[in-house]
Image (cartoon, rainbow, N blue to C red; front, side):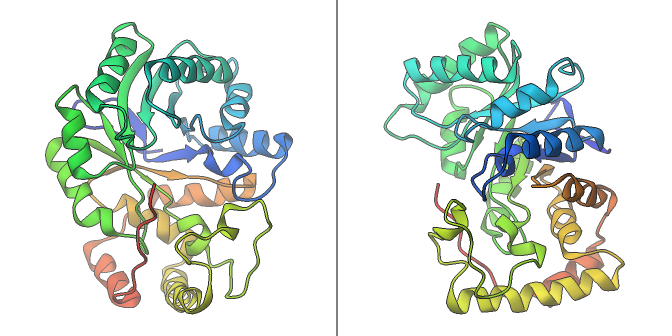
Length: 307
């Protein structure tokens, strides 16, 4: 699989990262056996860049089981999801090391801003972990340009992880170009829009109670919004099929076409989905094709989800 540098002078990482959020059970129930099979499939196809988090239920433990004896050659990323008190940072970090079965993290990220804890103190604490060899690189997720700028006053950041997909493009207008100028790597998460860009769901679909999409904070999966999404994704599906691909591969390849994006975080719920998704890694959309896609999609956009 192709690789790209994670930020200026950063390590080379695969253009597709296995996003382990999908095996946490947050998007519907999943057994440990199923989760392990999906993670093993990701490694088999070359997705040696893995992203998980403190807040992804048992995801870190599943990944730890899968990578046991295979740590060398992997680029392992996780995130601090809870509060940023020094006590919790250390506790969460130690728990991540234990669950993942490793003694260092390649990329340790703040899962979201926590204004109640000064970012200066948080960055200083992460720097101490880095200086001790426990963290190789530091990153942030769900931060705005202003929040990233503030964090940079207190130490280097190798990457930013924002929401970015064909239907939710706001970060592509400001954050991504700014990161490109600053030499900060971008890890685009939710390239499939929690399933909106898979073509699998029709208006009226009911998600199981444990699926986060059943809560639908921004009303994506309800009423007229869902109708509009379906209309747009049907047109995108037809365009992809005219190019001997499908909408899933189109959605992933579209994120990789942005010059700021280092890697696209792609999850899956079955090994078959992993094998299918990875085919997007070698699809390089041309400027003309990107213009066609914009014309097909029109001006339909969804709001960003709040952290």
